[in-house]
Length: 541
Image (cartoon, rainbow, N blue to C red; front, side, top):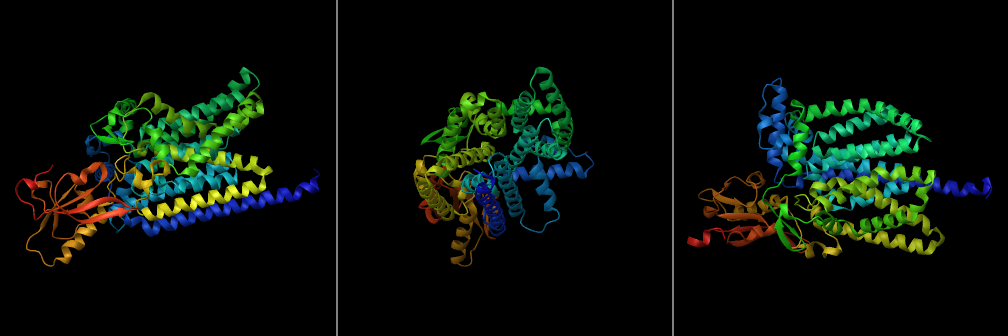
């Protein structure tokens, strides 16, 4: 083909890339507006009270000139970094709004940053079209787009891990050249990740593998490869310094003693407490979950389009294996290596080690962005290969668009509980009932409290305060209850009972159901009136 004949094709490709970029930016902007309009519709999560107290204690630590060390003796929270909670507790002092809504707005902002990081990473390794696809897939995933409001540790951590992966990929693919922006960005991302969880060691592992692979490919002999490796290690020193400095700010306990970081890692590797979870209808203790727990949950929590992209990526990977024997093939593989490693390694780890897990994929939310990138690479590869069948490709695109719209409709019906989304393999949200974890964060208690407020208000003036029992942390209901409704820990004397249906807690006591929070035909929370009960009927079951 001559240069003139190739011009229309290049021009069309450029226009397609520009359109993909503009559409991605529009989606990010729309998501930002969605956050601003809906952040105050979510309930308080189970761990949110203690996490925020930890953040306040960290503020006290700094405000006292490092004298007040109560943060390092508060429960086991010192084993976690306090980046999010420290920021939230600081903002609480200067922003005049409900602190729990403030936390949810801040968490969603992290979620938006994670979406942007996923888009940029996919653009880097796949291209503009792949970036758009990865962004759409992650937005369609309720475990991200819904969870980003209330999973105030999981989503911020996943976001920092995504940005660490982005800068790791940029740094490795450019070796032996080094750009200061990549080094500083990597240091900030790693420091932020360690400032949330010790699980950031995964990011260090991905970085190590990527650098070693780049050094191997960057030289023709042992001496030249060592030279590239030495250059990379020296260049990473500032990144390490930035990461340690940020970790020290957001997780000061980690640097109070040389062994604290290792102590946190070993504690969580054996961490287990008695908590029930459910897997395909089987209730079990969190310390007894099988190795396929995470994989099983991913298969039913990810949208079908997401899973299709992963399947395409696996097929593309198998087809590309022979090309890895060539130098050019290995260099092409290097670009995708960090994302592929970040998507696969945690799954392999859980399959082999079978660590204690609960709440489905919550603790491994950080695998969703790299999985979206890999799925986008699969979709992009399939689209390119299908160019020889333009009509079939157009029909397939229309089918994917229809499926995406179906996913969007499902999320709309679930709002604001998008994070309980399940795909057709689980039978949707209806099929997941009593088989998979649902509203484990009890976000629906906010709406349930509103129903109780309206129910009591309709009765008119009351002679005395009503006692309300809650199958959750007291604060999760108390914040939203009207005056005259007081939370009690003694369920026997409770006039009313609020509970989610998660793990059948709603059946823990008797009482007439006078309110239900339901989505897509599934009851997520109930309100019980117990005032007519006497004697043994008031006892918990």
